[in-house]
Amino acid sequence: MWIAIGEKTRIRKLFREDVDQMQNWGSHRDPLFFHYNFPYLDTNERDEWYRSKTGKFRKKSFAIENTRGEVIGFLSIRDIQWIKRESELGIVLNPDCMNEGYGTDAIKAFLYYYFQGMKMKTITLRVAHFNERAIRCYCKCGFEVIGEEEMAFEDQRAEIFYNPKYHDLQKLFTRTKQGMATKYMRMALKKENYEHRINSLSTKTVWKCE
Image (cartoon, rainbow, N blue to C red; front, side):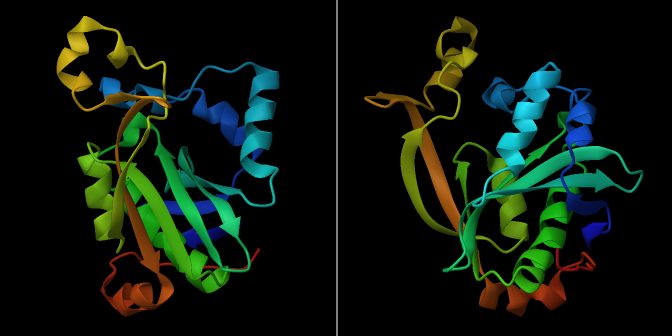
């Protein structure tokens, strides 16, 4: 059932019923991360959300469980280049489960499956420059910065852009022809570098091919 097992988390295929559990997740209090709050969806919208995460050749999504079997997050690999054996990672956690080491544990467990089970060669990601917590997590997992660029922010309707009380946060963004933008870091981890680190990782993993 599970493709990878860490000390705090277990990774498996994402199922439609997982989306129902996500409806009960908490909310971020930091306005910079409001767009990561899982939206309320009716049944049809949940069906569509699930299809968008799982029904594409170049995208795969996985559920993250804690040791009690509760779905506390999901991670996806998108823009999969099957010939080059590379893709881009994305991860979302229940805000109520932040700062407990789940993200680092889940990524470390998944990386073993990604490189050994899926036989991939490179994994990349992008993260907003202001998201220091996520950057620390990715560094712990072995990712290295390969570049930096200004890109359109994920939520162009974010409250921080028009609410005066968030004036101090607005300096993190610039207005461009493509909309409101901010600095993103590009990070990557190659299989050969991962294999050099594997013995030092604290997470114990098991894997199987799908």
